[in-house]
Image (cartoon, rainbow, N blue to C red; front, side):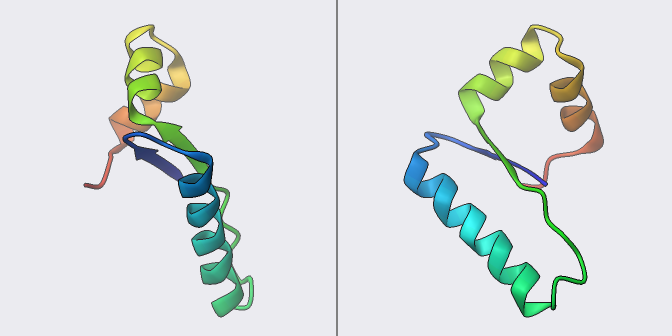
Length: 64
């Protein structure tokens, strides 16, 4: 799962990782969540440079 946030901090990233882990725990690890947290500014910069991963994430949809 890709999470794009404005002003990403280590504390926010840790909280998001903990939330993903809690969801897995609550569902007996029937699904594994691979979480990748991006700072919005960096994401847009890399997307603008044409990196395929960032282009694909943008194409496949971003929930707001």
